Image 1 (cartoon, rainbow, N blue to C red):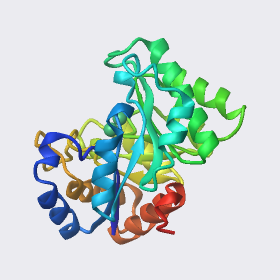
Image 2: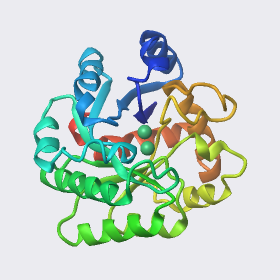
Image 3: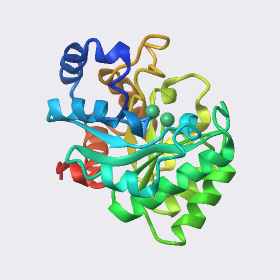
Length: 259
Ligand SMILES: [Zn+2]
Ligand SMILES: [Zn+2]
């Protein structure tokens, strides 16, 4: 049993074949998934998918790439929209200094509004962090000092320092197909020390398909390859990894009612 904690089912390559995607996921033992918001203004699309299938949930948030375009979205908007019964998380929001598609100031402003919404609602914040370790750690520590909030660093690609500082704040770390890539030794090092009750698996589909599907369009069924690699790295069975990650998902994404 595996849960894909982060995918984008609204993207054309997945939406066009949603029933096939879900059938292959079920056949691979993937029993649930969260379709993650990149634009608050498209929330009705995510909600429609989550309303149609009982094992799909959604989130509400603005991807850092679009932080400038959605600067009109305030904390209270996120809080209000997240009351939708199928919406189980805030985000994804964060900092992406690799692409710098939006001004960094706008990315930080958006991130802080999402943190505030997570603090108010108690819903987990799904954080996107790329090439921004120092600023991300500083913002998380400063904001946590004003009141804790649950969060996950999704598609983890950061260094060990950010991992340790996020864990110290009670955060979770989610591993994607990148962990199967040959050059991901530093991420595998982090995967070895993350506590058993603080990690998740995800695809980030349609991006980042794991080996042996690298280069193809990713989909939730492929989370199994990520899980197999992670189990090998941690020295446990795939079954044990499925049990741990599913329990962690149910605890963090408590609104799913999976506990
Ligand atoms: Zn992301
Ligand atoms: Zn994503």
